[in-house]
Length: 252
Image (cartoon, rainbow, N blue to C red; front, side, top):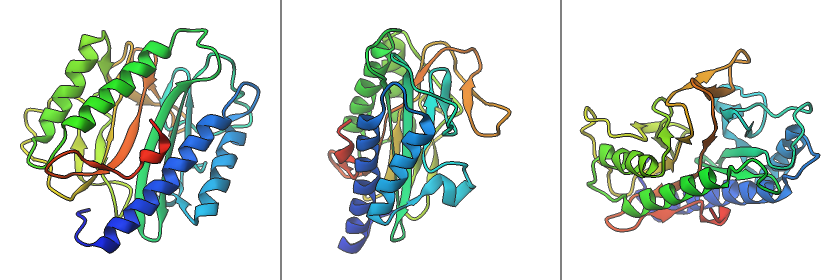
């Protein structure tokens, strides 16, 4: 969407706050010994307190309120009572929701407890790349240039980007135009970011794979060549200078 008045700005600000605080609190709550279903239900309670509704459930009928992916799961993991978090697990929590007609999205990858399996470097790389991407984006910038920054930064650190997962416009629905904001330079994409438009900027930084494949459950995605992936995401408004983060409260 494009924000045209203070009412729309305030609507996005409140939606962003709801998902950001939910993500932050879920990240704090995640610990060894709890199930991903327990973590998901905790997040659902926070969203409900804001009056917000789960975006993946509303949009796709996703079997959970948030997406929680563990270790080799890249994204869209289904919360389960059988998935018990362990010390050193790499986890990704993706929280998106609708509030009073406005939609916001954010995600966080982190290590549960002590970094026993050395995922910290991947997590930190994803965060650093997201920050660089966000600090670079502005109105008039080619969308492909943002992908070039993300891919270049990933390669410099010895990582790959997932080529079939994309960032996206957001605001009046979960996924809007521009829909093909890639983590690599797409030379065929001639579009540019527009002032006051709302987008979800996210990283898909991986150790071995370049593509994500859907598993038999119809939702969970893993790497085509295995390995691990870290994702971090903010919802923001494009300006002529630094963008305005609607999900800054997640503290990523």
